[in-house]
Amino acid sequence: MKTVDQYNFRDKKAVVRVDFNVPLDKDFNITDDTRMRAALPTINKILRDGGAVILMSHLGRPKDAYDEKYSLKHIVKHLSTLLGKPVRFASDCIGDFAKSASKELKMGEVLLLENLRFHKQETAGTESFAQELASLGDVYVNDAFGTAHRAHASTSIIAKFFPNDKVFGYVMANEIANINKVLNASEKPVTAIMGGAKVSGKILIIENLLSKIDNLIIGGGMSYTFVKAQGGKVGSSLVEEDKLDIALKILKDAKEKGVNIYIPTDTVIADAFNNEANKQTVDINAIPDGWMGLDIGPDTEKKYAEVIGNSKTILWNGPMGVFEMSNFEHGTKAVADAIVAATKNGAYSLIGGGDSVSAINKYKLGNEVSYVSTGGGALLEYIESGSLPGVEAIEK
Ligand code: AMP
Image 1 (cartoon, rainbow, N blue to C red):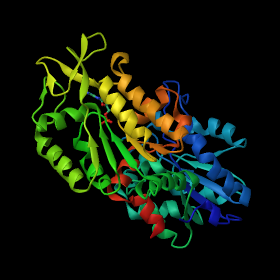
Image 2 (image 1 turned 135 degrees about the horizontal axis):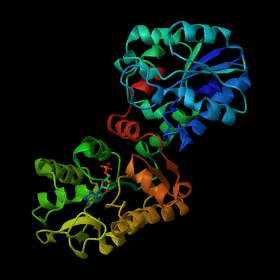
Image 3 (image 1 turned 45 degrees about the vertical axis):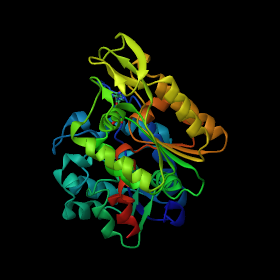
């Protein structure tokens, strides 16, 4: 994999796609600058080499036109503080503003271009727009893992204009290396823990994982579709009636591939979908009418902790229950604790995709697992298909 480490940026202007899609409050203060901090090592490497940096990013979801609310001008000051140097700003990412700003840019300087998504050509992946962006620099760096699953102008199409001068930034390289540690794991047993609301969004991921893992642990809302498919009584738990066949097929495929599949045996049920509801623990196949399963039960927790404890490689995506409600977070917390314990014993653990990341951060355990992925959709799509448009564009 060609990264910024294998490229000398001396006297080069680097067009760097970063993910500065940070949350802003109503006064345009950045409420979480994690993504900006993540890009600093790549930017600093280019500057250290003696190059210049032209940063491009999207912010929010503007409707294909200028919208002050989504202007990247709001983050210039903070970026400059983080880098410890002034940051220039071009009030459009293409056209005369961008051209003259990049022309005037000296080596050692940093320029931030205005929000790419003020132009609809960005998400459309329009070639002429990508070419205009490309004309601003000598080398292309992609460090935006969070958008690497999109074939947008700045994340993928642009790469063709730099046949010999395109490399991955550290964020991208790190994410890919970590996912590959799971997908090509030599340290067995490999265990994937899949939770979250629905099975529908995760069918392809599960199917693709079956050839790579030894254990598949199922939790969260999707469990009840598996339980019902096998003839259990699930009350008013979340069930995808049109996915019962698929649940059975997953069970069959797992068996054929020699994967141990674990479905919860007991569950914490509630008589309403709120934290104050009455609750009790029951056999997952015997949920009374009017009650819904909102968490895994203690027997399941124990079994799952045992399987996780015996694993050498662990992937976790999706909570075991409605962890946002304190009365139904116990199972999710137990799985997080088991992963931390396994990691301490030498297992490699990757947490990725949306709500399991929120969960691990809620319990402040992010530093006690091997890796927490920054790219939800991108991570899941990489697991599903084994590559991403943003990755292929550079490797091609
Ligand atoms: P996902 O985005 O598919 O990973 O789903 C995450 C969401 O699933 C979280 O907001 C959880 O509250 C929710 N969830 C987990 N378990 C259940 C359940 N048993 N019933 C309903 N929602 C659930």
